[in-house]
Amino acid sequence: MYPLLFRAVLSRFDPEFAHHAGMAVIRVLGVPPFSWVTSALTKPDRSLSVDALGHTFPSPFGIAAGFDKNAVGVRGLAALGFGHVEIGTVTAIPQEGNPKPRLFRLIEDRAVINRMGFNNDGADAAARRLAKLRRGAPNTIIGVNIGKSRVVEVENATADYVASATRLAPLADYLAVNVSSPNTPGLRGLQAVETLAPLLRAVKNASGSTPLLVKIAPDLADEEITAIAEMAVAEGLAGIVTHNTTISRDGLRTDAATVESAGAGGLSGAPLKARSLEVLRLVRSVVPAEFCVIAVGGVETPADVQERLDAGATLVQGYTAFLYRGPFWGREINRGLRRR
Image (cartoon, rainbow, N blue to C red; front, top):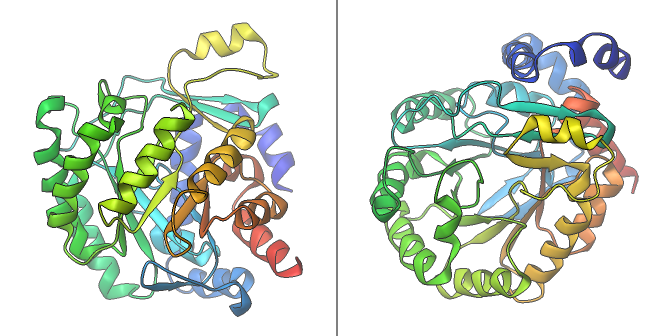
């Protein structure tokens, strides 16, 4: 039913409006008795559990950052069968993000272009919601993705990240440092190893015992990716997230005029599949077996998730395909993995 609903109804709405409408439904599904019924239909089989980052994940498949920026749909997403939820990106200072429209579907490519710009309610608001979640849903695994506040100059980025980490790390199961979004001016420049290493060192000190990961861009050269991965191991990080959205527009089926009209922003979805596997294999080739690698990008089917796991991913995340597969996507992935 969902593909028909998407084609006939949802695809006609503005993508950001449709996302917020869907999130309203997800929030309802996280409240008893709806959550009890939903969980009964979607709960992952125990054979899918994964031990990583000091926790037991009920499934290797979770929701990537960007879907639930403000920690408002965590319970509903967990009820829908996702093994973890990475909220954010959260910034120390609340911000509205970039002007609308800022989210665009490329339906023929099963992809999305976004230039959201880290729109979120800020670290203090996220901390209050996470504290409430910790009381009401203590077993849900929640990662927190943090980024640089737009009003903060790049040279002051470390203090800004440290402020977010200090506030949020005690409430997170793991923390991911986002230095790879294409939608915040100057942010990707922080990926240079000589800049990134001291930043991560400071954030790690502020995070205490909470596992720390870094999220990189797929557009980096291979040698830059291996350098970051090796540095992350040397700095004692718990893992790396491969990867964020891409600024590339290569190989798209959607007509060029439509792509051009969407403008700047990060591309996510099916077109990232090949590069996602390349980056994953590259990172896994230079990090220890116990180092956590979370694979993101171009994931839609159980076969896609299994391919990432076979290539060395510890955990796998998705986002864009939720738009095209619907609310029972997590159940579909988990059942497919169990059969495999």
